[in-house]
Image (cartoon, rainbow, N blue to C red; front, side, top):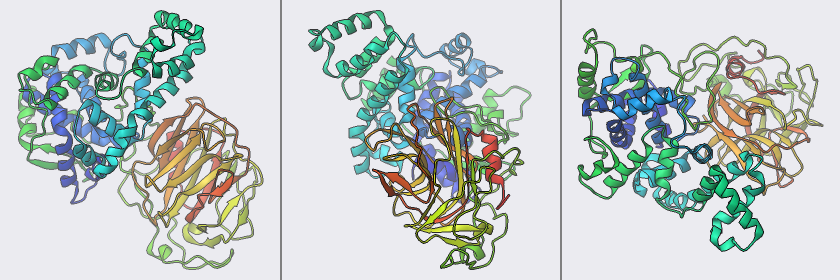
Length: 617
């Protein structure tokens, strides 16, 4: 299993939570302990800091972690937990260097980029987080932690052959993203040289000095520190030279020292020599086997496995005289949800509205609805009606009241069968069925697509150059192909795809950089695979103001991605297919209900409310 899948299991009140937590700890506790030793003054303090960070990271990862790899997310959470210690009576257990840095920077949230690099490091972090999560893991574990292929495969939940393939291409993908971000964000005075920076960095500046353009570039690089750093970064050879730069860019403090310690362990140096990077005497970075138990909240949800002896001793040594070592764990371990851990470099926005459970829950249809068969013609009503509010797969807080969910530019609730779906929004945009679209009474009325059929409007519904939101209930019945739930045609491709991606086994929202299959694309993926043959609520958002796309499943944010290149897809709005290379593609197989489209980027609280509305609500 991947790290993300293990985190999800640890949050369930099931028998497998403890085993999943133990496996996750075995994979990462050694590295986390080494970094914690850099942040603290004693091994006991380091052990408790790791335990606290593990709890906090596990509870916030599926919401705030977006599509971030677990290892860098855990290490960032560790520094944030240390920053909380700096404000109470545990401050004296922190390393003096960390205390000084926190005092000078005003805390982790307001910390500047390490050094004086205001562009290079920031763009490196952004490029890293635009990579798919598994590629982030490969890049981090190979170049920063210098771990072998077997360990990377273990953390990504994939085979070693796949990791070898990814490892051979991930740096090129990373550099491409980095160069694109640099070009898109270049200052006005830098734009005439940005393309030269990208092209010349690959061949080396000295070889290009004969041209006037290159000479002008040389003068610009001498005068512009940011462009010079980007140029030097792009000129770096492939390999471990990128490790220190990534560590410094993605860890808010002490990234270089952490990378040096990893390199020392990788080289087999004894602990004394490993302190050359500035680390105090500390436990080895290599993982140790710990006796664990699962700590549960009052609701019975498993949070994370902890070291029994370590946590008890840590509370005794680090707590004040008024604390009870056998009582409640520290505040960072308690039941209250802490959503403040959105760390530097992450594009995930902070959730608005009420706190949400971090494990996505799927609304499953009842036995009677699952056993119902679609009719042979639109208008037939096979089977019996399911309950209006299907039971949830996991316990979660009650959804907020719907609030103002009006203003839709389209809403097809498929309540009644007919020759065409009725638009119950004020816009009144009916659609046309193509192929064998069958009607079912599942969810008080829904449609079933057989992998060839679809529904479309006669004209565009949303302006894809502006902010919009598209949502639908989907019950996927196959995982054999790509399946698009909703889209809007351009000339060559759809302007967006709200779909199932067969290669990653994830829901995703995709928007291309241009109306061409040759152009790049940005995607936000679900945290886990779809719940097959189960109703799930999908919401895709394009926030034009923030230049960001967001994907929600069952009202919970899954991931985000930057999206800067907009274009207008002014063709039909479609349900059950997309458009690729000018041809109708990715035809859906399964059930769809309550499709809505809004010409605005809805907030997280609105989306949670939308997902909480029952059939025909």
